[in-house]
Every structure is written in structure tokens, then in C-alpha cells.
Image (cartoon, rainbow, N blue to C red):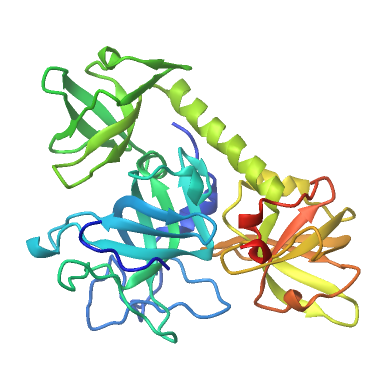
Length: 385
């Protein structure tokens, strides 16, 4: 986690994300508090070690990314202003860490934390800190803390582009004033307009994407249905536009570029997952893969092929994948019930040797035989840090 901050200082997303925001469905109310059931007599859901959380149990809030450690998968956001906050507690930071199975999305595709620029406005799903460990919330400005400060374990982090797509939202441009650098819009959800308009600030550096090209601000025209990425959201109104995509070809191009980048990243670092069972006699390791990978990549895992298993930490960083990886045949690739954080895909591998890190509950990364394993930059390997 980061040290205390001082005052001076129409794309279709995979169904894998759908369960993340579905409310808990049951004949009786959930035993824990949720965003849709704000009964403060109930506790927020506390994550259980070794288990994936139930659907709808996370708490949602948004904020701007202003610090991150992409290797440790930790970050700090400045939480958005809301009516639930006192004015004296506006703009306070929240330090958080990605859960091992926590997903990151950027431009409508899976991403790594390092793909997201500082200053990007992000939407997140969070759980409270681990109550079994000592906890010191991030405090600044005379020990003030955000009302979200205790929500430090992130299940999902996504930019405005991805968040809008997943919720089937676009912004209709109603008018453009390039003298005052204002963009007046109406939000469309499932094609239905909101009752009020939203005015965003434009900047000289706002990137306008149209077709397969970068356009000028003069390309913004009333009637266009667009996607936006923002910065400085809620500091001075709804936010300043960093990027704007005017049409479907530009959105498809942005998504495909990020998807290719993500696939390269995973092929170099392996599928992340959790060991759920080990047969010591038969040397069979069963791994449930995390739901943070483009699902098309799973086709590169097949029974009868071989794969290596590398030991990893909860941050997903490996120790030394070239030397602490053992390979063997893939005995089975099967489906299990899908949950938030779980891909619903389970792999059984029979490595040549069982390593200490192959214990149930531990994190590993799997490399199909077609994926060349090379030494990563030293700062990415735990033994090199």
C-alpha cells in the first residue's frame, strides 16, 4: 500500500462482467448491506479467504486515478464528490489494492493497471479492508478521511468508456461552444434520454477520435452519439473531456488496440488463477482461472496439450517464471459455476514436480505450451525487486 499522502504533495462486452453488478437475488433480503439495500444496521460483506464473493455484494464508487504501482497492483483515487459527503470531506483520497481476481478494463477491453493514464476517471467495485489485519486508512488534511476510505479491496476498475458500454450508455451532443470550450450533452441509456443535460469542459488537448483518425474539435457536431473519458470529474462540475469517440468505427478501433495489448501482456505472463485442489499421489493440480482475461484466449488451453505452472503472489507478480515453473500434460479443461472473480473455467495439469507454491489457495500462472516463457524485466519478478 502507498504511504500517507501529505497536503503538499456499440461494442458488446463479454458476459463475464455481467454478474458483477447484478443485485443479490433471493426470496429473503441479503444478510449484508449493499448499494441497493442501504440498511446501515447490516454489515458490509466481508470477503472470505479462499472464496469468491457473491454477486452484488461489492460497493461502487468512482474517482480519479492519481497514483499507482502497476506491479503491486495498488493505486490511489480521489473519490468523486457526492451528496453523502460533507463539503469539508470533498476530494479526499482512497488507497486500494486489486484483489488477485480483480478485473481492470480500459477502452472496453481487459487491461493492466499500467495501461491506464494518471488522471483517468474510473468506476470501481470495492470491499472493505481485511478485518483480520491491522488497518490504517489514508488520511490527509488534519486527519480527514474519505467516507470510502475503508473500501480498499477492488473487484473491478474501469474507465468511463468501459463503464458506459457495459451499462449501454452514450452521450448525445446537444450543442458545442468552442469559444467557451463547453460541450452540452444528454445521457442516453438504452437509447432513452435523461431528463436533464450535462455540460462538460473541453480542452485544447481533448483527443477527438473519428473513424480511424484523430480529428479536430471542429468535428464535434450536435446530434452525434459519443463516448467520453474524463478527468477532474466533480472538482469543477461533471468533468473535463480527455478523449471523445464520435462513431462506432473509432470505438471499435480503440477497443481492438487495447485488446491486442492485453493479449500480448497475458501471453507473456500466463493465465492467472487460484489452486483449488492438489492430488499429491497423482501430482494433479487443479486451478480455477480468474475472470480478468479476454475469454477468446481460453481457446489456447486444451486437454492433451502441455502447460507450465509458475508460482505467483497475490499481486499476480511471479517469483522467477523461467526457473520455478513446472510443466506437464493438461488433463482437463472444464466449466464450473461462474462467480464474480471466477472465469468459470478450471484446468487440471499434471506437472513433473509439485512445488511448494502449488498449495490450495495459492496463486499461480499457467503457460500453454505455445506461449514462449522468457525472463520478465527484473522489477516484475519478485526475486529481482
